[in-house]
Amino acid sequence: MRKSRLVLMVIFLLVVAFFALAPGYLDRSMNRVVSAETSLAVGEEAAALHARLSVVDLHADPLLWRRDLLVENDHGHVDLPRLEAGNVAIQVFAATTKSPVGQNYDSNPSDSDMLTGLVIANRQPASTWTSLFERALYQADKLAEMEARAQGRLKFLRSASDLEALVAVRAREGRPVGAVMALEGAHALEGRLQNLQGLFDAGYRVLGLAHFFDNEVSGSMHGIDKYGLTDFGRKVVAQAEAMGMIIDLAHASPAALAEVLASTSRPVIVSHGGVQATCKVNRNLSDEQIQAVAANNGLIGIGYWDGAVCDTSPEGIVAAMTHVRDLVGVSYIALGSDFDGSVVTRFDTSQLSVLTQALLDAGFSEEDIAAIMGGNALRLFYQLLPRE
Image (cartoon, rainbow, N blue to C red; front, side, top):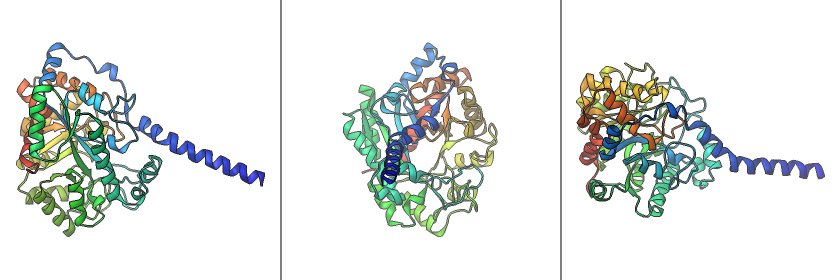
């Protein structure tokens, strides 16, 4: 009997330790900043220019982690104080709801999920343990709750009118930070078209079709079959666009990307990634795909991690942007950090002026830098967000 009690006590302590320590350990180990001290030389000209910019980042994942984003954290990449320090006008917060075990860029099955353990360890509601749709709703609720506690420093944007109001207030006061909610992978619809309305009502305005595996809507560039849109997927895309949602083709299979670009009349985004010309990884866009996105008047968000740019220095990131500029022009380039997306970067969101410096050093004009750092994204949001 005494031995049984001891075993139960050990199990209990292990469970307590798991819930207490695992989320923080994973966050600290998977969302790191390295070699930042070699990348922070920002001159007076770049600092002054950066302070005048409206910076927009098309993709970051901090809502996935058990971290208070209203205070400055000593780990990870994004929180509200660091967004303010980096002069970020709008951050797109992505909701990741499922990731396959053994995740890789080449081929992943859809029948496993390594996020379930994190969801439970994060002490999320039991409804999120088995439902991807509920996980998406939970992350939107987290953003809404942040807005409520932020005392005017954060604004959850749902419409073009919200955006216009944000820009006007920032012009006077330099704050708040705007937030747009994005879904990373339409598997969170759980095969139900009616769930799209539920996500829209929760505040989602960007719809990513796929993540690291094929789903009921679209094939993934990292899936097994890598098919295009399904019949259900075509209905989802049509309804999402009619509602005023922005389609995100990051992670979408080449077939799905081509089909959407051939059929839509609205610009799309590829929120976070890179280009094959400077980083030959399956994750990144070919020149033909870049040209197709540009022909659609869409945007390509350049990421900061090794899978996107290979060289993660500010100069390496700007090299990818330079290739897009030389191929199709500046109007199609945006920031797509993938901060807090289980990536290692050279800097966090408080240090974005290093990109302004690197763009100046590469010979970009102030007008072009303003477009890349946020102006292009603002233009697209003004055009595509619903008017309420």
